[in-house]
Image 1 (cartoon, rainbow, N blue to C red):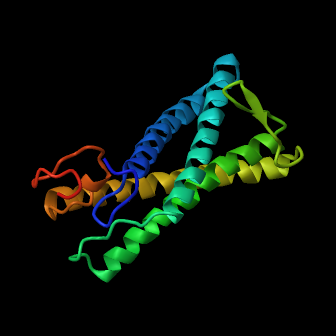
Image 2 (cartoon, rainbow, N blue to C red; image 1 turned 180 degrees about the horizontal axis):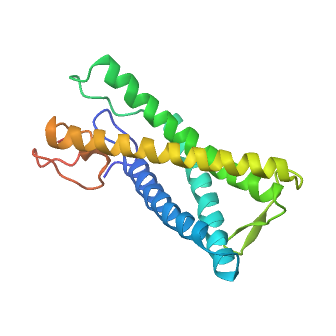
Length: 191
């Protein structure tokens, strides 16, 4: 199993970061949605505390993923992809980096401006980014929501594109991000 990316597929580090982030983002959608529907109280505070901890974990993982991405080659896109599709694929990937870094920061600013602590699973507290300010809290909260809905749209596009490449175009786009999957050739590195 390759650690680093190759021209044909993502290495195990990129794959692992990708799928861990996918799991955490999925949990975030569920926890955030449930917490938003709860009345003020202990249950909501506990869920929001977990939401913040997971969000900050995603933030750190995304920094690591970005550093790994900048220090590694990226697998080549299939030769049959039009230049328009290639540009769109690259844009979507960079939007993921931007959104998954900005969403936790917007939440962190919202908490700081609301005079609420951002704890990492009760182990330590993150420093406040801004002084308490209701106006900043309102802007940060709205920004957080808009970015989350934008992320959901981008995830939908990304998922549909990956499934299209796998089931309709029958190329290796999806396979190269699945750890240990052996394609038609029986080789782990290429479908």
